[in-house]
Length: 242
Image (cartoon, rainbow, N blue to C red; front, top):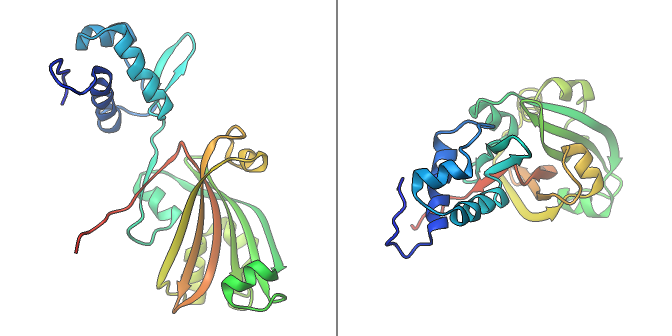
């Protein structure tokens, strides 16, 4: 619908929101300035109160942002991630026409300890690579990840390799890994001080914590904890009624 139905039971501001969301998602580019409140009032024949209510809600939901003295603009698009199939950050960003990159902020060999050893079904003193990375798209900080992979299975991985190739490419091409499945667990969080520095956002900003277990022939070969910016990602799950 691209017009306001004043006889509808749906509140006018919600109708206006839906119209503007459709334009933002399908027609307008990121950072495009949108018409002023007065222009929207005149075009859709609604009150200033209706427009302000709609705009306030759009701002809360991250569709628009305001710049004092300049106007209102379309927010950068969220990455729409489909969770119904295995995916990698690098490949998904390429599909969206973004330039993916990773900044390795930490690379070390550590002992598994109680918590991590249980996940991999190894001894507490067995070794793992611990890799910390900032994942970027077009230079924008998107996710902060900490990954654990078994040292004995992947001897020879270096920081330099990770700075030049995606991890999954290295695992597949150099170690003949064939990923059979993965599980992910999501929960909303408020970004702490360290995470906010890595993600280049304010401390306390809403984000999503994602735990991924990646399997090869029923065995965990990767455990990753990611913090994804809440203003950059939108996740989708398709439910089939079989």
